[in-house]
Length: 192
Image 1 (tube, helix red, strand yellow):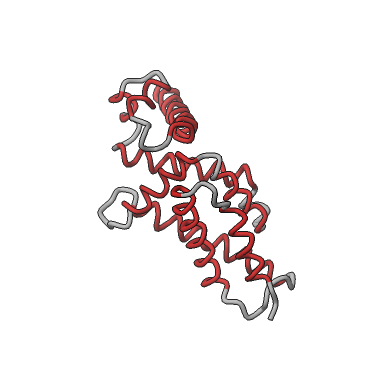
Image 2: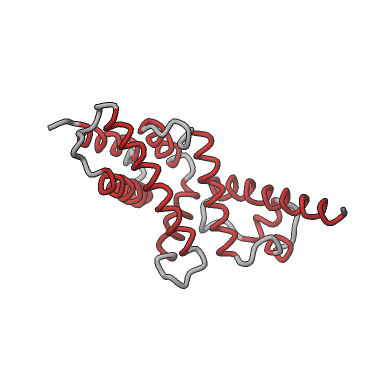
């Protein structure tokens, strides 16, 4: 019985670490956040914090997974599956530059198949492509998109545009990522 309580406490502490890391990284930035700072924020030593994760890379991967979980719930991506919810997530990203930096850095590093986050990013892109394809199909069925539009390619293009705009925005914060994606949507939603 004590083991169950211990397990539950471990799960709760891991969640606390991830939630706190989201806040600290969003505020300070990925490069300016150390494992020591994250450990201090949750009342642990560095070794104590890493006890909950197999490596620093896994910690940061799990921070991104938590971000996706929070954003999906907060903006109703899984329930609404609307383009407006997608715009809201992109708009929100401009409020959490540290998490955008973390995502950009880790996603680039994870292109190496040996990187610990490689499988996470492969699965993430599959998940988001499928979600976006579903949204596009619903728009087609409602008559708001051309029935001949290739939804898989279009979903890939939107994800590529969103990621590319994040990189441009990190270099030039005057770029309005959500406005650019909304404009792309207007171009795609025009019926020929």
